[in-house]
Length: 356
Length: 177
Image 1 (spheres, chains in turn brown, orange):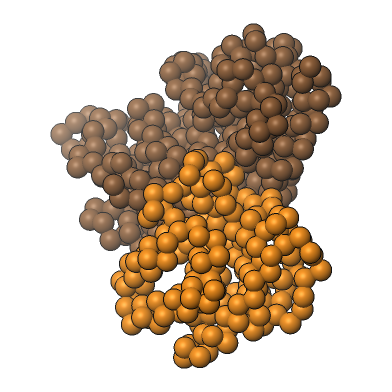
Image 2: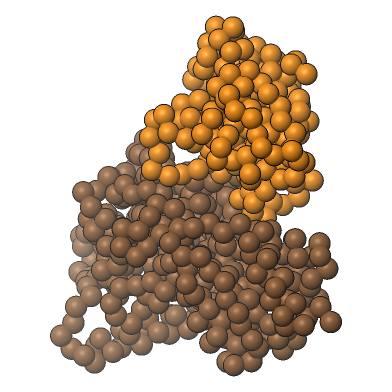
C-alpha cells in the first residue's frame, strides 16, 4: 500500500495524469497554484502530453476546447475569479458536446475577493455558469482521497456523456494535506473517440460548431442536450449519509463545510443530540429524491454552507414545503470551526424541542 | 483519540516543516492525519502556522477550535495563540526568543530553549527539530523512531547531508525531559 501525504491541489494533478489526462492548460491564481505547478513538473515530461501556461484564463479554456475537439483528455483549473472568465468557453464546450474537466478551487468573492476558502460559486457551477440552456456535472470532494477518486470519475463522466465536468473544491481542500492512495495507473489506451476531428483524409468531412442560423435546428440541439441531462440526473446522483438512521435533525452540507459539520455532529452526538448529515457528492445532479425520502421521517433540516445560502434553494426545491429548514453560513472566506457549528446546531435542536 | 496541534512562528523557522513531518510520521504509523498550512498573503519574516490532527478514526474537521497542543517559536505567535489552547492543554514555548509569561493558569507551559540548543549544535535552522523532538516526548503521539525514519526519507532524496544534524536536533529535544 502506497500512501502519500500531499496537498489537495497536487492530488488532483496526479490523479488527472493517472486518469490519462493528455493536455493541461492553466493560468496561475491562488489558492490552486500547486496544481498548475505539479502539471508543469510532471505532465510536461510525459510522452505525448502537453502542458501550457496560457496567457490568460480565457486562452486556457479555449485551448481545452481545441484539444477536446481533437479527441484528447483535456483539463484546466483555476479559482473563482478565473472560473468566471472561463464561462464563455464552458458554454461552447457544452454546446458542442465536448468532454472537459474544469477544476474550481473556490475562494472568497465577489470580485477579486480573498484567497481564503469559500463556497460562493455554487450557483455558478450548478446552474450552467455561462449563457445558454445547459448544465455541467458538478462533483464536490470533501477529502484528499475523494479528490483523487472524483478526478478519475470526472474524466470518465466527461467522456461518457461528452460534457464538461466541474470539480468544485475550495482553497482549504487545495492546501490541506492528507494521506492519499492512488488506485489506478494511467490507462495504456483510452477508447477512441469516433467524433473527434483529426483530419478528414479518406473520410467525408465532419463539422463541430455552436452556431446555426436555423432556430429549428438549434431547438433540436437543445432537446438533445436536455435528454442527455435527464439521463445524467437519473444515473449519476451520488451522496454520503452520516448517522441519519435515528436523526431528528439532518444537516445538509457539501465539500469542506461537510467536514466541519461532521466535527460538529460528533460533538452533538456526544451530548446525546440525534443529529445526522446528508452530504451531496454530486451537486448537479442534486440528490432531490434522497432528501424527499429522508423528509418522510425527519421534519427538521439544517443547511450549512460557506456562503450566504445557495444550496439551500435546492434543498427547498427538494422538500417542496415539507419539513422546516434553518440555515447557517459564513461568507467571504471565513472558515467556521466545528465548535461554532455545534453551538448553532444545539441551539436549534433545543429551540425546536427535539430533546423532548 | 483525536489530538490537534498548532505549530506557529516566523516564516523561515521551519514551522510548516515541523507540522508536515509530524503528520507524515502519523501516516507512517497507520494513523489518520490531516495537515493544514495557514495560507494568507504571507511574507518572509511574517508569521506562519499550521494545524496537524492525528487520530485513530476518521478526522472530521482539519480545523482546530481548541487544540490540545500549541507550539510557539516566537513572541508574536505566543500572543496570538495562547488563548486558543484548551484548558489543560500544553503550551510549548521557544524560550530563546520569547521573554514574556502567560497570563493563564489552566495550561501547562513547557519552555524549550530551542534556538539556543540549535546554535550549540552548530545550526540555528534546526531549532524547529529540537522543538519537535521535545513535542514528541511531551505528547507521546508517535514514536521518535518513526519520525527520524520519516525525515530520512523526505530529506534523504534532496539533502542527504542534512539528515545527521536534523536527527541530532530531534534527539536533543527529545532527551530534554
